[in-house]
Image: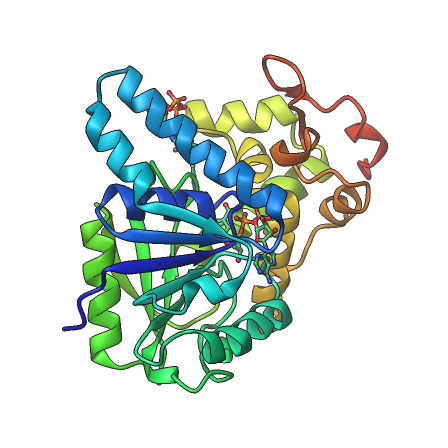
Length: 300
Ligand code: CAA
Ligand code: NAD
């Protein structure tokens, strides 16, 4: 089986920095690329902060911490990925943007390299097909926060080779996750069920079933969820949620994947959730509080 040594990650945002971190922690050499230099520095800074925190808490030896950080390098140009054994993309959830990236990477990265997308909602074959290596193209769907969540979905397309799927599973296990092989259906296994639930929480709020706090408390206390669905929406990012919903709506033409009007308006207002400071909650203070402006956008 292909032995992977060097992992490239494209996109240093919410997901990409975490994928880079867990890969470096597992002993891989990692090159993290973001087209935006500031986003790259931010992502590398978060990883550095977390490793330093683990050392300070004595969960990690100082030498091990240094070795993890030494294995991780950053770049703004995909040319830095040329020698990678596997490249995982975690850029914006948009097929055109992802395919533009893959066309460039197909030229820039050695032919033996396996390509993997962290898409939340797009069928993987639509990206594999624009490269010259659909047999070496898989999905690796991580969960947020990558450092904590224990699952990775390994998506087998109709064109993927057994070897590429096995390499994806072996990688997932080496980074300490449970790697589950899933079919190439938009949303795979978890998001096929989770995304309609996250959207339904918004519809319920729009219908007036309860306040933001009541809906979240209901699921924390009544269903044992670690965070309520509206908090989770802010945490995932409202534009990412909406793009994922659109991807699945496009595939299935089923109303349960349609973006609710309130979500569309919140995104139009620039409220992307925790990352921009406003979503269902206002995240600017020490503790999140329900966004006081949201009733203006509510339909009831
Ligand atoms: N990065 C790194 N580590 C983190 C972290 C982050 N962003 N957030 C929390 N942690 C770590 C903390 O450092 C802490 O570690 P230690 O115990 O070693 O100190 C541990 O996780 C627990 O953290 P907290 O005590 O602060 O918080 P918590 O117990 O409330 O857990 C949580 C936080 C893990 C995020 C939890 O609330 C949770 O599981 N929430 C649900 C997350 C979820 O559903 N994710 C899936 C989203 S959907 C998706 O990802 C798919 C998609 O395509 C959209
Ligand atoms: P994000 O917006 O936090 O980060 C995306 C990063 O990609 C940004 O830093 C941006 O500068 C960079 N980028 C965009 N286009 C680029 C390009 N062409 N080349 C290089 N860098 C580029 O997004 P995110 O939440 O990390 O999501 C990334 C991917 O992961 C999406 O496909 C999303 O659906 C998926 N995903 C997200 C979550 C989640 O909870 N947010 C969970 C699982 C999967």
